[in-house]
Length: 210
Image 1 (cartoon, rainbow, N blue to C red):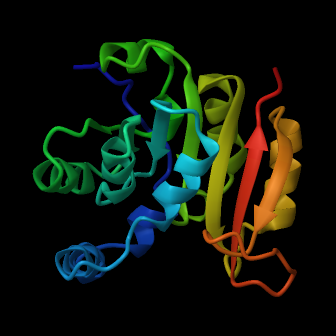
Image 2 (image 1 turned 45 degrees about the horizontal axis):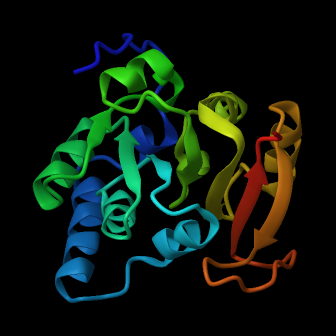
């Protein structure tokens, strides 16, 4: 097990907004949807379509673990990472056999990941489910820089979030350029609906150049 660096950073938006009953409702909502057989694999199918077979995928901000679990079922080698240790514990219980790591995305580096059995660069780093709008304010670019460093040359970043948050697509585009990514695609949903400026959601695909 990796010995992660102690994080003394300010709280994330997730930690300040999703506390107590809000946290419990979040977990219960996804558990109920999964138990009912609802389709919760849109993000995983999107990533699967972009990735090579048996790809190495980092599911950043993995939450309840559903995306990493779905990608594992699809034949990929996925690692779910979340700073919320309670969510990671829940994911491990619900999806035994899928690797999850309780860690701040900003603390990830090749040494930490090698300790978890993921020493090679990733083919895809996925940040679905509002991850970038729930990190600590002002750290979005830092998170993207970490993602860039963990990708293999030619690897892809996938980032999806709601557009009604303070961190918007203009900020994302500026941060992608600053961290060395080349934006390839943007959609309004995980089902490839065309992007438009009034969309409630955005999904961006960017590549680390070869």
